[in-house]
Amino acid sequence: MRLFLAYQPPYDWPAMLQFLSARAVAGMEVVAGGVYSRSIGLNGVHGTFSIGPADGDALELTLDFADESAVPEIVARLRRMFDLEADLPSIHRQLALDPLMKRLIAQRPGLRVPGAWDGLELAIRAVLGQQITVSAAIRLAGKLVAQHGVPLQSPLAGLTHVFPAPAVLAQADLATLGMPKSRGRTLSGVAQALLDDPLLFEPGREGGVARLLALHGIGDWTAQYIALRQLREPDAFPSGDVGLIKALAALEGGPVTARELLLRAEEWRPCRGYAAQLLWASLSRSD
Image (tube, rainbow, N blue to C red; front, side):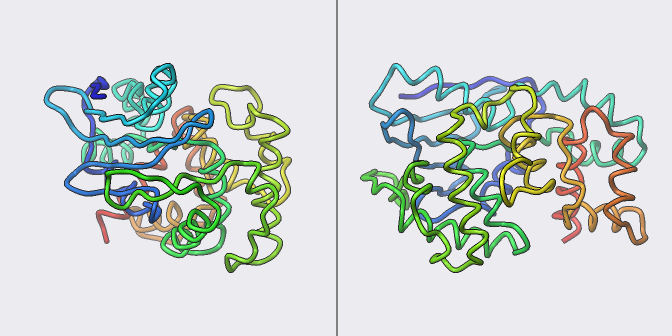
């Protein structure tokens, strides 16, 4: 099935693709030829999708999914995942009150905030990424998918598994993947929390960050990161993020603490999440 997902321009697809490519999990995600492909599971049915730029202000979606009744939900998820509803002109007017943000917007006017296909998957990946590099976290995620995911037969090369179901992760000893036992317990606890509250990662639900912070092993950085990419809260801001601190320090030519970053970010409300994405992107440009 082929569909076209429209958006309000501008849209920086190369930046979106770069972000997703750097975090692609082996067996579950593939980036090739300017197209992002991945396996998906929804209501017990498994399939794949591929998405890339189309002519005009749209992304072209190729969907391979047996349950056609699920297409509206899949499309809604993908519109959130690729931030297609963002009103960038309004967001930019707010952020451009800060000269630094105005400069960064001019450099990347179509930058969006990458979302996630699934809340549990993003939460697991965020916990895996605590205190280690992105590449190390992706390797752990690949091991998790290979050991506990559902095998998938797909004509798309490289897509071999679907992310594990919450019931599987809630019972698994995930510390065997090669991480501290406490982190393994956190992963299983997050899966169990979703079983207890199926709306735990529902976008737009009031009090989402507070519910995440109540979970064992979930601190402010992890909760804010999940709020930004899954709950789609535009003002979420992981202020302790090393990359954000490094980016602001490089841009302003001096050392910056997490507290100083948080105070500076007050100027960027209610769009701090988009300010964070601009800062992350500036760091990749300088590298």
